[in-house]
Length: 254
Image 1: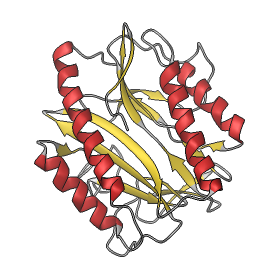
Image 2: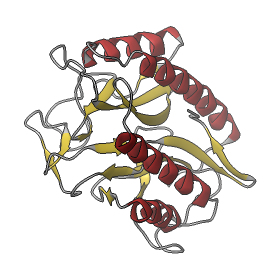
Image 3: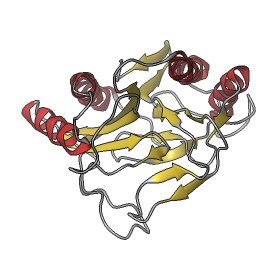
């Protein structure tokens, strides 16, 4: 668990600004007929033009069989996380897609994700999005220096129950900064006042992930993409924040 210095935080602010700008512009391209590969190429180009490096491209976690082959994770409908962009994955009216992006700037990493609809979202889809975004806001509000990871998980879980959605418990947030993933793990369920204590200066990515149906997930044949086992849709929002003595600073605002 690594608290960041003021100098490091300045680098993270730049990384977060690049990420936010790129994610916003990439989301504008989501429309019928666009391939997920096109979104990926656009995001990578924008990151590099701004002096950043795609954090996910060629990232290989411990135990992974091969590095992630893209800059952007594009998870469509029942795909929960780590969807690999493809020239054959063409977006259709009514699809929902999660754009999950990481940026490194001078060796400092930030991470953020949004879920958007292809075309106009119907009432059911909008409610799903609103609930997950509300869970993210609740998680951010519950986070504090010298607070506990369980504070965040409890806040996220309460919103899922309020709306009747399921938390995908096998996935969650994490600390970030000098690597794509650092400790501690930030679960989306928990008990307030329990879990790991978080120091001032810790940088974390909070990422509630909800399913409309059962929360059980399966790993696809590409060995990266996780999907809901029952084929129900998933929604995912994420922001990187710093825990300061004065509260929370969001590095990747939407």
